Length: 49
Length: 379
Image (cartoon, rainbow over all chains, first blue to last red):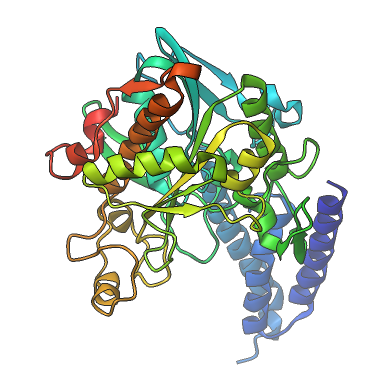
């Protein structure tokens, strides 16, 4: 249970970093790239998949 | 074209796109996880209880599952049938459901668990592109059944360790920790999968169940297929059953349960309880590595041109041609197997423990050359 919470916290941290990177990034292709990474992270944080 | 001035607009579109994709995918995953498969018990079912009665830690979790009790009018031996140990092996799951919906126990008591690893029914194996469901025509209309995963849902049990160390000290790859057929005899307060296997072991001990059958499927290219695996105490009885199966036209080999391969039903339930532990395997083309697209047709008809080619080259351990290996045929093997092992138990232990007799379920012949389909036996 504790391990799962730590794992979710790490996933949340990754999500924040990737979201920040997407915001700062100028190239649209890299923004889209970051968005694709955000989807599984979001589903994991919410424990849907 | 300078896109910098549209930076915020592009960011907004990207975020909306992400949310849309996450929403659509998330709803699909969520709905599948919470899908309630309909099982319509027949008149042979006399009562039900929850597996959590044998491990209270399972209460309210996705590991809890229903146990169907089919008690005969005549007292006798007891038999536990485990279907859905691996939900990507549908003939075991469907054979158990067929018993619940059309079986009638004349003597003894039969316990049936159609969704043994209930958590594994709430997701698919990643990267397999498997359908969530398959459909069977019945008299009451089209019925929908779940095609799940080999292992418990990682949402229920995560993260996997790099190495899974079984309580015996055996080490396996980390993902096997979610494979219930590697976690027996289980741990009362262990991982969810260990809690389920503990509950089953405890149930067998508490109810003093005489015989247990775990229904599986394997890849056609895997050597242990169209086989019964028996614990050493069940070997004599299984030998008798095999002879009867051969007489009924079901080609079945008999394999001894490996003493050093730990965590499996046929090893641990035989070692830790008094039950006669058996496991049956049929050949499932939707499960192997050689097939084309994993479609609903493949699950039901079992026809695949790549497996045909592999059979021609002699790579398979089951007979396979253009007729495939249908789900009906595979269910027929399991049901005929259960009937023959019940007969063998009655012959060997009937005088001491009483017989186990179940009627009403289709034979192998009914589901192959008899012109019947499994839908004819579902409510």
